[in-house]
Length: 542
Image: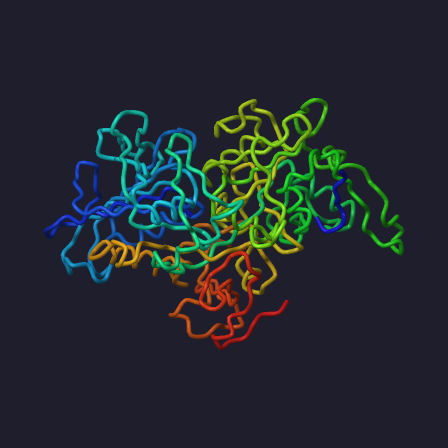
């Protein structure tokens, strides 16, 4: 939060993809669970890009043939653990299919429960079985009302299936999943086997697949309180309207050091956060004056203070589960972990329920989304806020969640993203090198010498990897996840071999970021990004 506030004192998870190619020509039509699949490909990995992945897969379908299935394990947050897609396609959509121009039906299963560790561990040790949704167990209910997806039961025998992953998706490079980022399995799954992630590049084919913007999410009440406090300090314009989320200059800003202190669990209560006047003495203000604690600004913001816990306003932190790509990206940017010796680690669950902070580690981006709303509303739809207390909380998230879809229209859920060091999580700010919280994602599969996928399996995987890293495809997806304050979400990276030059003028219709974490041909999210000098163009300076 600049210097005005100071402290005193886990894109798919088990992402399983089953691709079914049914022989014979058929008319384009939407597909129900009764159709059978004869070619299955399983992908596991991070959940950060779930909303975007829906759009990427829909783009592979012929018009009018796309059906999507969401698990109903949590009726208030369908699809937060498992998804499936059933559609008809041909080689006009997926070039290279062995069936040529003949229409084929494709079934894609996607698991989003457990974190990006599932995009690495099951590939390095294929004996590890990954549970996936099974829509062909008499457990799918057709879309009802305004819903566009089937709801699928997961509680009975046969509703889930044990599978071997053919490929994985992670929001950071596989080698980063070590040390403090060592993956842990999801609740109910067997322990992960011991694997050596440093061998990923020799065992796996790792394909860079574009980048993703992350954001520090704060509950709506905390957002408003930060605005009120920073209006008082002069950090935000005095004309700022409390609750404004449409003008970048009105969005609260936090420093990297302050965010890192939160994530590391070093700030225990909101009463410990002091608001200090930054307005120059020449304006008649008393620069450096302590204006009170952050909680003292609840009335100015027109919101309720957090529910007291032992007489204290405890900080609530939503760090992701160990092995989640989102968490790994946050740790790398704000804590230089695990790349730096003796780096501070992110706080772990449960934190300190007595003295603070409260820490929760949701196993997926969907659960994180629900947790933030629960803290804002004093509810427990996520099952991670068991006492249903109203809390002021911060959490690690990717910006394709809780986007309104329209610039100038506020999102409906109870949280907002803040600026970091004065910059909002927009694509132009990432491209100019001013917004730091982003990473390159990868898609990987075992290489041919390690019994990797081949034939149509490999064709489908390569098509997905190409689309996720393609500027035009990223732009098409971003149109559906526009944030209130500007364009955000996905982008192509300069290391994409199809990009030969980079324009100084950022183009939202073909988003490309000139910076890269690739050094000497090796992707490492723990190093500071630099300009890719191999591509001619002009670097934006703001």
